[in-house]
Length: 388
Image (cartoon, rainbow, N blue to C red; front, side, top):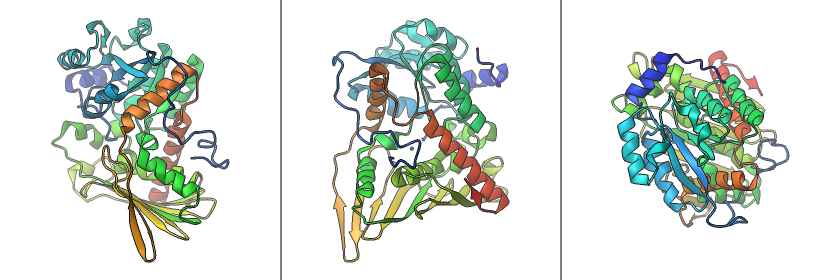
């Protein structure tokens, strides 16, 4: 049994506060061990009978879970919501009634391990503060369930590796919730970049920012280093980092970074406000990325090629995306049908479980981002280039 590094009082705090748990919460070249064997497509229509669906349990009933993930099951072909895990019984009961979840399938954080006795649950989705991902993923794997964790998958490389090891030992699959890699506009951009529609890839710029609001429960835990693991980089900078990797299909070899927080701002007593980092890739491509907790919401990237450029802005929003491609004397908008990235992500993992396939965004993908984020923090602290 996994021994929690969190005290009983911490779990009591989870139960009492409920945190409003949610995460605001990301290709193939052979040079990239994580992306090399992964398909860029959406889940296929498939091989098993249409009535066969994997049963899902959601751990943590905060805003992201209740407003994005749970409603997406209505559009799923291979996934069904069958269980809930929460420290707030009344909220869990209300949601169970709303989604048709049997009341016997409501768990709390203390009896969570007994989910091993529930054959209806095939997959458990962890949507908790970052530092709790490891504990509940490991306990879920030990309970014999396939696991998906929100990003960042953990707050340390050690914990991320422990999650991978626990799932492998249990013979269960582990996936990380990089929803943008299941979203039609991002998939289209990957296809365009890889097919040289922009010419030779030269540079990527990406910005992700939002205002951290201490008056909102969903942001309160994000100001605590022991729960969040870090500030804007861990929460939203990870989108820029992951995008740079899936757009190039490469892993960076060199990192430089700068970090700054407004003095005496209580929001940033423990975590960073702003992070700027540069990634150099083997091909020569440079990615310049920014994350901030102090400017109005932005979720964008621009990709520069030798023949053209493209903008996806917003790039990592939930339901709206705008894609433009431009050359020296022209600019056009590329129109695509918006798709439900949440349903696509859920069904992809269900298909992997039902057909014994490897997920597109496995634990190793989350581990790699975590290693790189630790290198970014090192580069910012040392003010030196870090080789990776």
